[in-house]
Amino acid sequence: MSLTSFLKTKDVREAFKRDKEGEKMQKHKQVVVVVKPKSRFIAVLLAMFFGPLGLFYSTIRGGIITSIMLIVLSVLASKDPMLVLKDPSKLALLMELMLLPVNIFVCAPWAFIATTRYNKKLLSDLK
Image (cartoon, rainbow, N blue to C red; front, top):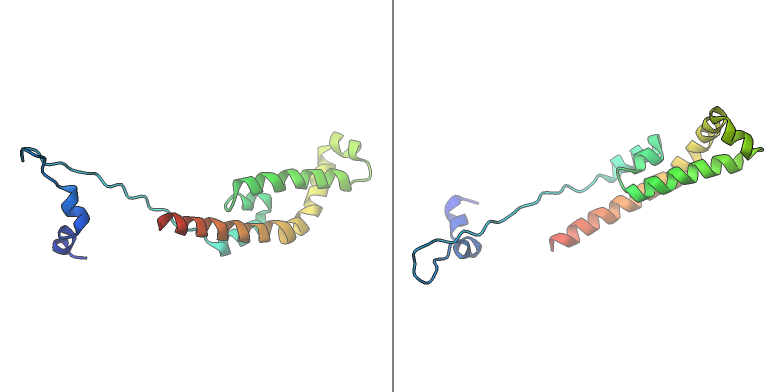
């Protein structure tokens, strides 16, 4: 769009109106906010490789929920939950074993859906 056609647009003409006496020129500031949509591909890759931490790219609430879920599942999956809670190294080992299925079957689909919803909301806010 050239400068002359931009200056001829109705919005620009209305932005510079003279008041009743013609003494002052009013300027209306227009604020432009640029927000990029999130990539579904990157969201799924981050969720698959980093699990709940990668899910924070798509949705903070989902990252918090899956982090708590992973800890709870790891404690419940052990034979002696009290022993696991006393020894953090055993909890870490169980979390590593639980991480792959959680990443693939929970975090990756959640990241895809959350990113799709975010992008749709972003587009609907523009209209």
